[in-house]
Each structure stands twice: as C-alpha cells, then as structure tokens.
Image (cartoon, rainbow, N blue to C red; front, side, top):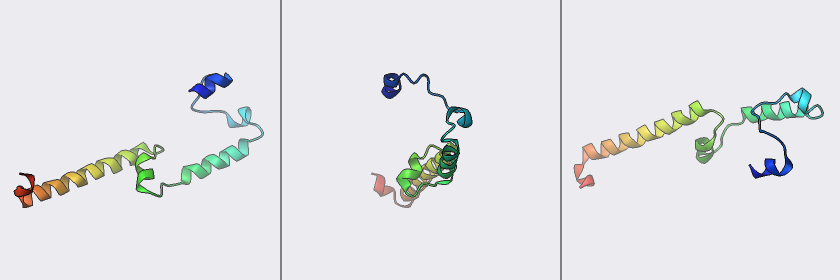
Length: 84
C-alpha cells in the first residue's frame, strides 16, 4: 500500500503483541477488538461482504444460489413455455 511506503512503516503483519508494541493503548485496543468481534451485519449487502467469518459467507452464498436454481427449475418444470 502506498501509505505504508510513504511513512516507511515496514512490513504489515497479521498479529501484534499489544502490550509490547502499544503499551499506552493496549487495554483500549483489546476492548475495541472484542467489540468488533461481536458485531453482526445489519443488511443483506453487509452480510454478503462481511469477511470476518468466511464459513458463514460461503454458506449464505451457496444457499442463495441453490434457492435461485430451485425457483428456476420449478418455473421451468411448471410451464416450459416460459423458456421458449
């Protein structure tokens, strides 16, 4: 990312030692992380773009695909003239 190269921050890591690297804000950062972990999406768009729980994300996507295919199959089987 451009911002990191501009400030010469070094490589981005996926985890940090909060107490050692952020001694003044460690407690607040842990509180903030806990708060963010319990938040749930409040709209369909947010649900489909929420990347925190990939298992739930793919379950929802596959369920929607199966639902749409089931509706299409039911319409096609009921009246094949819809598809001509």
